[in-house]
Length: 195
Image 1 (spheres, rainbow, N blue to C red):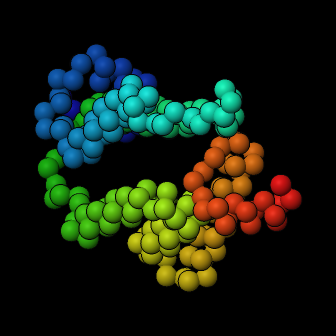
Image 2 (cartoon, rainbow, N blue to C red):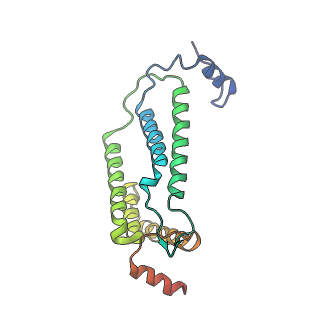
Image 3 (cartoon, rainbow, N blue to C red):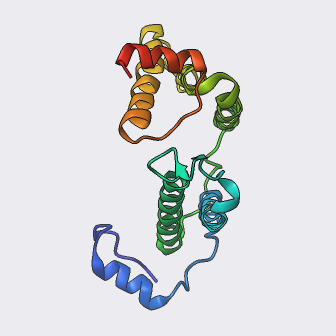
């Protein structure tokens, strides 16, 4: 069956036609992208279901929580959005017409960059408690900026200093969320901000 490609991708008739046929032309549709989206969908869904085991309970002092927001709120929101977006991507991937086989889209350099990004993010998570939020964020942003191809030292340092400091101040002062930080840095902020 030949598809009319002159219609735009947002043509309702095109989607009605694909829905009506119910996936009869889905041969050869299981691609690497689909596998990754299914992995994210299932992983994020399971993480939301087992959030109680993944996030530590909030600190309580004399029967009162020390933070204004539950520690599981932001992870739950992010994982729910990731799961929903992955489901949408899976649906669109399954509904688009089958394409002719082409060469693999991932090359060796891209795979190495992906592995390095994963390693940098793992290092960031492991450095968070011993070095605190600001130092670990600085180191991670420098590494990720270098990995993404930025070679301007001024831009890398500016991004690695301004971003974490702004995020730290918003999280701790506006949202009242505690982030792991070294005592010396927390004392410095308290003295500078008059807290």
